Image (tube, rainbow, N blue to C red; front, side, top):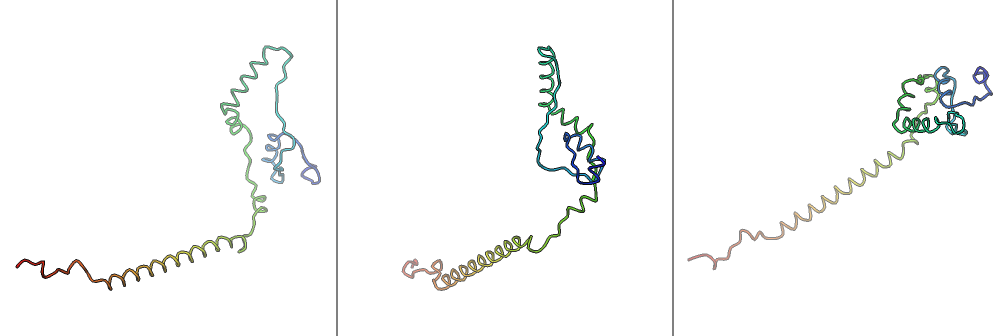
Length: 146
């Protein structure tokens, strides 16, 4: 591990072991790709009566989620390395968020167009109502009783 921390060396191990080492040393990092998918196994002699017992119990442990609970409880929790989080920050520029401004601008323009269309329709309907005589108040004189 000292060679890895010194530089120009890599450490290949099971993920649980590397995670444990990372909790102790903030200068370590892992790669995202899994290039060696290792699984753990129990070794028993051929035709052993314990083969089926171990297989069924391990299957039940994995399917019930008990293994995940044990991992969270007993394996070392990764501590926060404040130095590494500061190295990963990125300054946001206007070019990073310009698409949001374009969408807001398009939304404002569409809203203004809808408001203008509603105003024009309102004016047209209002002028038509003024030009038409109100039929509810007109009564023919011949229809009045004498």
